[in-house]
Length: 328
Image (cartoon, rainbow, N blue to C red; front, side):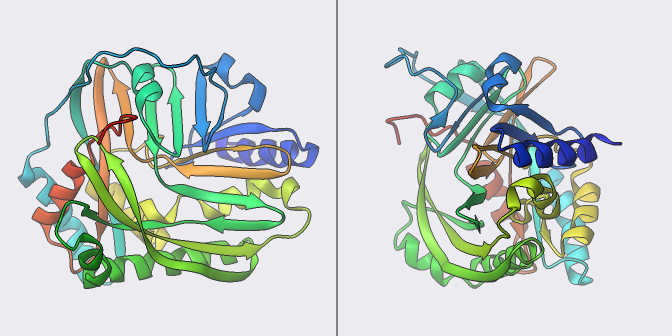
């Protein structure tokens, strides 16, 4: 039995027992982690998921002034991957693809200090490996209902008439329609009565260089009363997250492997907690990974036929930030 099959089986068993657990699944579904919730810290796993945390709050921690320097990939290197994607889009092999790359960074903060200082709805620290401070929910389950909140479409909040420009953009509208349609279909594989509760609403996300606006939607469905004993199976049918892969999913994943030419690992995977009667989870974006004593910030964006290479390259760079608590 491979690692992912073992993960599915273990999650189903924990769910059947109503045993709270933490889980983390990489984008390729090769190295999943699942541990009883109370054992996560012993394994070097620290989380803060909408205020539910296994980290002791020890008051205000004094931190030195933060700095971050980047070594952006060359624009021509980004364009090479972009052109692979564009050709596949023109052939009709994909309609939306999330193209991502790592950016080498330098900072005076440790991964632990970034975890302590970053402000985000979903935070995760895997000791000495990576830190994630994500604004994006994956799925939420409560009272036999499942919800997902795909996030697609970005603009600098300081731009004049930013909200109107974002909501009025044909490119961003098509991108969001595509991801909502994908996530509706994904939820329909595990639930019934699929509804778009809220469509394309703007949310402000703080960054280290000011705020950005992004658009999200809320989609819901109804689960069978015995959903707990099928948690692993439910997750397996929804992975990888549509908002960080694309549509149609299987063909798009093949194009991603070709264009990015490297495994993403835990970046753009999912993580979350099951608490016996509910589940909360997030997409692992806004992600800094340690590799051979160097740090890499992973970022990207959705590509459609309307996308332009230079604009998408700038969006990738714009998403390299740490949203420090109490700072814009």
